Length: 460
Image 1 (cartoon, rainbow, N blue to C red):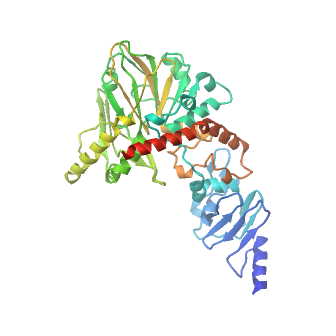
Image 2: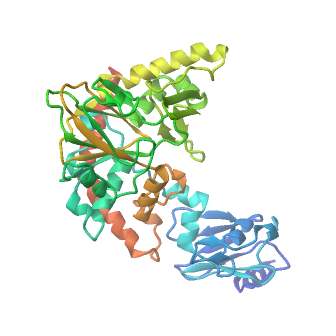
Image 3: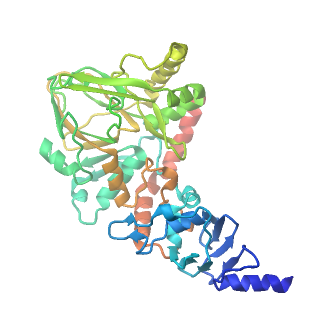
């Protein structure tokens, strides 16, 4: 019996398909991985991983990155998935210090870098991902040194300024660019260093002067505007909204209001779990109407990641609600109960952070998370701004190895889980890790204390 097992192990070790048993394992160099055939999939254990990974054989064949199966120039697949057999099994598996080698029954050979396996399998990314988000209240509002980047840093060739600004938006939901000349063209040039400007029916760059009404929107008045997110009447609202106050209100007022919508959603979910479920599953309409423009969308308040179930977007705008024709009578009372409770939660002054925007300071907010508003004002007040599309913003974040919570967050490699990083990883990753930790570490303890304080206050 013992001789048979040794014989089976030796044959599998050298990549020879074993006819006596369909189970095999291999363990080579100390930096290599141990592989175990579990029948329908391959279990890979690597000394630098916190746990093993299980990958199916169809997945492995589909993800071969040889030149025959993958175009490395266009970064597109070439393998014909129609030829894949769902019960495919390898003829041999061999692990080296750098990669996993698989030989298939037809003789095709595939190689998989361990970094690739960890970052592109469900189990690997689910473990590695640590959300950068940090919810805040007025008492824990981040300090300017964490969220502000001067224009000169955005213009630097090392790109560290852009990276810090993007990370601030991902972590806190907003960021500032300072030292920007107070005119619309300088504002455009500054923000375009971060991301391409999105064109809407407002144009690319919009400008508000006084109380003129180039568009039929409350924003173009001098009235108070409560906390809300923009473009709920679009099927895909802009991800980032940009504000630059070129001239504060001459006769006072016009302060900007910011509310962390994800923090509000968390509190609402804890207090009204049934309401949270209702507003996560029940869609109602929003609209925008003016001459030549008829925009309408039907969606829920809370939108979640389809894989993790985590909150992905908070859509809240009481001004743009259309006639409520999407909810049947038997659910109408539930809607008004749950939505009115949400409105009260949003309007709680303890969630509101007020600030006076000044010329030269450009504010960028995550419109999928942060609600904004404005105090009423008197006299001439000039504002300009624009929007970033979600796809363009997320692409910019990924280009700096920053994970975007919107991008199926369980599938984003962490920048902080050092024990999951194999020595063969590209050194630029370590640079990003160090810079991000530098950005946030000096305030982390203070923020933890503030959050504990808020938790105690909420109990009373």
